Length: 288
Image 1 (cartoon, rainbow, N blue to C red):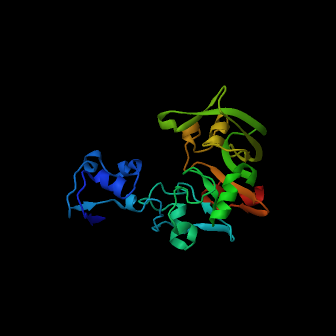
Image 2: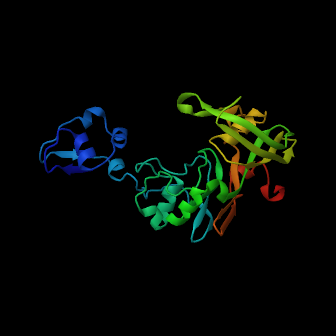
Image 3: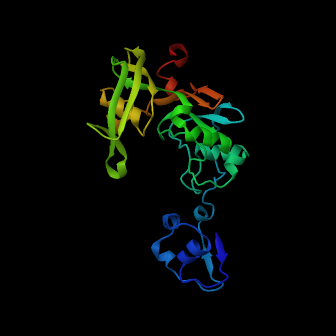
C-alpha cells in the first residue's frame, strides 16, 4: 500500500521502526536492505507491504474447499484438517490455511484481533502432510488455561498410521530425538539428548493382500515429527513418508484420530474419521 510521508526521514527503516514501531526482524522479511536504506523526503510516496501493515492480523481470504467442523461449543472448535493444508499462516500475505478458513467463515472476536502468536489460538500443530483433528480455543481465557498447563490438559492424543508390513511390535517405544540437517528440518534418534519421548503403538488391522498395517499410536508429550521418526526407527516407516524411509505413495498416511482436553472442570472430546484418502486403504468404522 502507498503512503505519503509528512516529514523527512534518513531512511525507510527509520520510518518503520522508530515512527511506526515495527520490528527490524519483521521489516527485513519483506523489504530489501537497499529499500530500507532509501532516504525519504517530505511528501515522498512510499510503498509498505500489507504483510508489515497488517502484521498480527489474519487474512480473511480462503479459496479452498469448505472444511469439516467436527465439534464446536463456547470454548473450543475442532476442525478436520485435510492433508497438505497448513494449520496457520506465517504472515498476513498467506491464505488458504485452516486459520484463514475460520477467519473467513466466522466473526469470532478471537480471530479478528491482532495477535502476537502466529498460531492464532491453535492449541497444537499438525504437519502439512498430516490430516485429522485440529483444535482451537475460541476465547483468550480458554486458550491461556489450556496452553499454560497443556501437558496436564490434554488427556488423550491418538493417531492412526498406515505402515508397510505386518506390524508386530505393539507396546511402548522410547527414544532420544534430536533435530539435524538444513535448518533442523529432520529428526533422528540419538543415544542421549534433551528430548526423551515415547509412543505407545498397537496393531489395529493387517491387510495381507496389500501387506499394510493400520496402527494406533498414543502420543505422550509430543515433539515435531515424533511419530514419523519413531515408527521409522523401529523398522515400520509410515506409508508415503519418504523423508523417513517410507514407501512412496499418494500421501503420507498419518491421521490425528482423537483428542481429549480437560481445562479446569471443562472437558472436550473429539475424533475424526473424515479423511477419504485415508479410508480407501482401511474401513475405519469397522476397525476402530
